[in-house]
Length: 439
Image: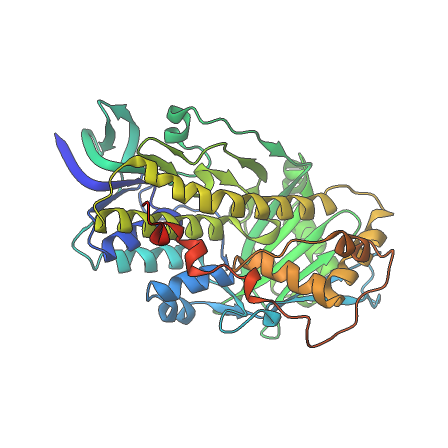
């Protein structure tokens, strides 16, 4: 049995559904194959960055996303040299509000809620088909072999998109090399009720750990707690009371809330991995999201990079069908746009991870000074927020690095320290093929 589609998307996560929604909206026949039956019980990204919000608005789903999300205006950074409740530590803040309107905020939304919104929107279009469960088994005679329940079928498409995640079978078959970087720490993540007053993001750091707190709707909070690599089993043996205490030492206001976690089964171990493949495209096959790159979760970028990949690839494929330009060579536009941007974000995230990787007691003083310079120097602050927002790139200069190190004083606040238009990605830069005469 052979089924046909214009585009086959292997993987029904938010990245795969983003490219599928764009294709469905422009009338291109797209089939999505998702191997997981139901909703997986594992943590995926929930912090939506400004560029992703812009993409959602272009796709007409931003109002629905906002309805189910919680806005984040800033993230407080608290350094604690000692675990003492009486300590008054300086608070720095990374503010999304310094970004240009209207995308001057981030959003926390449960991952499965966001995925459901994308799926339901795509299902409104007759050119969209969804197969779940369906496991990609490999390619046979230039067709994708997919196992559906107990039956194997062949799916023939003009283009194949791998959105399978880190363990992409398509990537393995493409023989695209990737070099991994691993870290000396892991994370524990869990959602539980929060105080009503906890409405903005917060990262509380010591010399050997940190606790990230990001409020969700319905008075919930997503927490991310750094632990040494290999210490997870020992923590389980110590019991939940010890786990509660670690949270309360860092954030006493969670007392009476964190104790609602009644099982280790609700707490997920996250193992950060960093890699970037050498090529996103080979022939008529394209990789997106974690199939192409994996970013340290420090800046909450993984989900956003996948959605942004899907936006560019979807827009390109729609244009290729509209203009009847069907050479796989055009897929290189997708890689040319996305790979440099992803590389920049991966570098920033990796550097941030290294700042928290070494449990050196003297290091926390240096880190606190760097973060103070970053959040209080107007240029450093704007550049950092723009770079993590996805709205543009404004690279640091040598002067910036000297200021951030604390060797010279911070700049003074002035009205002219604003983001210039040249630092924001334009429509032409997002979708350059539309203005190429030779295309």
